[in-house]
Length: 274
Image (cartoon, rainbow, N blue to C red; front, side, top):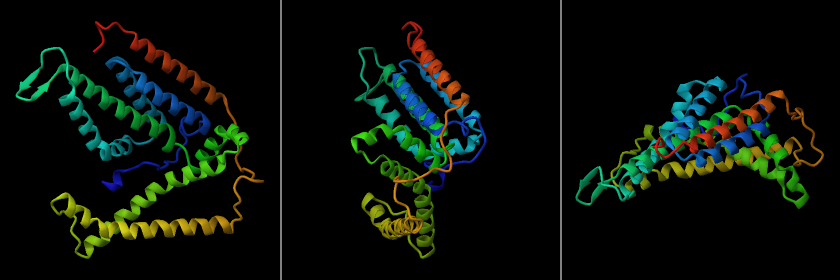
């Protein structure tokens, strides 16, 4: 399961999404996330999911990798769907009426909406940002977008650096956790205990070495940055200067079209909407 978590990973490539300016991709992700929550019917949500699939095709990233990233959140998706199905009430007659269990059509609709929203968010945001943007480029993009806050004495560079380092080390910590679990199993540790308390006790031998490893890596990173005379953004130059291009203008144009289509689909008459 840990190997299926791809949050924070970057997959190198030369696709249209890889070549976009990181600032453009950050803005597009924000627009996409907001638009996902603005979708009101099945037509607009289906359009969002189709858009996410198109983004996967444009990124050149294998569909298996994207589907693998969904596996760790399947429990959350199923739990959310079940909650919506069994806790939604309606004035209409229930489809299933079995004692205290009542399932309404609106509950099933809400469950489908929530599943599509979560899938669209995971696929769209990951493909647009983390999968196609290297950590260094992402840091530069965040810093440039937040640059106006420097006038308010906000440590923009430090914030962007901490955010990117945290995102970068998620795959590293997951890999370290997997190694620790394998080592503990080789020493006879059992992680199949029954009961919540027993399972928590079984994972204690993992947490302690994981914390030690995390602090050791943080110390090594701090020493490496200090040895390279890192002093934040003061007097810092960049090997790659971010510049908007015609590709970014096209991407922004498509984002406006994307919003208009979602608004148009939301305006479909309630007789056709589901």
